[in-house]
Amino acid sequence: MASTTNVIEGLKYTYGVNKVLYLFNQESPTWKLLGKVKKPVGGRGQFIMPAFVQNGGAFTGITQGGALPTALQPDTAEATFSLQEYVALYDVTWKLIQDASKDKFAFQQAIQMLDEGLKKRIFRNLNSDLVDNGKGRLAVMSAADNDTVITVNSLPRCETGMVCDVMDLTDDDTKLGDSRTINGVDVINRTITISGAALSGTAAGDYFVIQDTCDATSQSPAYHSHGWLSVVSNANPAAVTEATGYGGLSRSTAGQEFWQSFLLSGGGTNRALTEDLLLQAMDGVREKGGGKLNAWISNLAIVRRYHELLASERYFALSAPGQIAGGIGRKEKDPGETGLTPYEFSGVPWYADPYFNANVIIGADTNHFFLGVGDNDVPRPISEVFDNVPFFRQTANATFEVAWYYQMELLSDNPAAGVQIQDVAES
Image 1 (cartoon, helix red, strand yellow):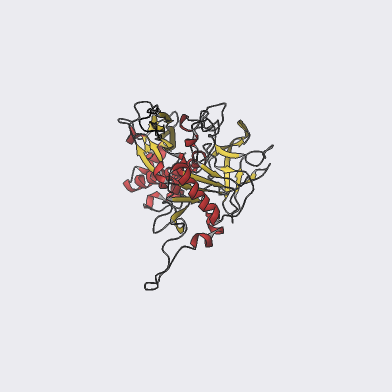
Image 2 (tube, helix red, strand yellow):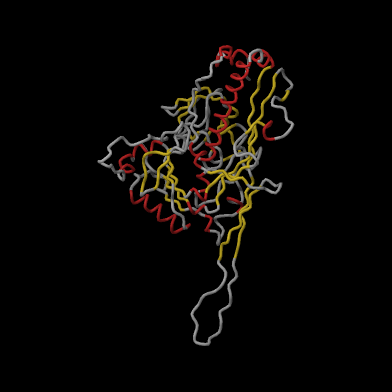
């Protein structure tokens, strides 16, 4: 809850200071890399994509004056996607509003601080959904860790202050930690400090998620969008995400193999990334889905380890020497832009998302992967989404509540236009 005290300490708003230090990484490059597509949803909150899965007609050689062949009928399928709803809230005390309203700059800066902090959390969490497998994992345990300081296998996507459940990998109904507050995040050592007693019964693969959003007893599917790891795959998403298959099409049903992506796995054993492995991935996308990759996406640890491999195709013009523009994650852009790096492979640019999952690379033709959204392209306060809704909503306490709303889903009209490379050894 935002009170006079914590806003004064955070902003000193009576002096009109306009810079605030946010002590967490605000990057969301995968969110910004994916295009947004807004279409009428017919009052049902759905996108329906027709797929022409079998060409019509028959072609054959015949004898002179011979009989004509029997025409073969075309076949079609439909992929149906429901948009996932999201809501964001923060509270403001009556006292803060009255105190700050005595000066227009104080009120403006106080609300700006709260809005900016909420937006950073929103886009961080949306980005977390998009880089994951549909369960909304914020961190994954690398091994059993029955403690209150938990080591995870990649950069944690949760933040201090968030309330999370710790879910059992093998049973989406089992909470190993229920509604635990995140008391600390050590980015460098990849550890998370949680409230309450030490966990018990944990194992590698158990994961953190926003509380009450991935418990199959409470709801199914999970309250998260599909992520790239569940879309660019040769298997159906987890049952807690979507029981009937991605878009309602089961990838395990004969005749629907077109909905599978190309996947290169090391069988659970990490191996070095090689040119041959990357070329196999590019060839597989061309053979499987007729796509041409225009983006590679991974975390920063993979870029660090294979820096020389990914930098080998750069060249220099001796007539105009100079430094290579940009750096890891950005190129003359603000933090959190598309994550374009100076690296590429076979002419395809490489993007780095610090929060991408460990030991995995995605290659994609991004023309076939996009975000379907509702009426607003990005999350908005409800006063901007719905007419005649007050900006501040009264609650049962001496506070006003500010609510934001959004609908989104990661869609694809050709999942085979992507490839997933698993089990890649990191730095």
